[in-house]
Image (cartoon, rainbow, N blue to C red):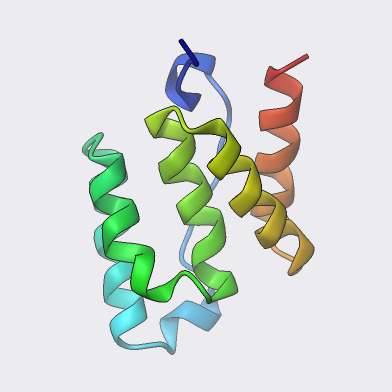
Length: 102
């Protein structure tokens, strides 16, 4: 069984970036997803963010949701996409995830 990110005690970071603040409906989706993650409703958070999954601002949060749900492959994919787009939190989370596998 693959442990979730919560079980791995990783220091994951996700906040709402200024780019998302100007995005209207996407902002509401991000806020809702973060709330769902805090409630341990990780796959519900993924469902909320799926319509916005082509936006770099959501990739790090999707990675966190998948990671907390125990889907490390998807978490790594989204953290990598976020980091490649210049998201420092995504880069941090990717490093944390990889460190946890060592």
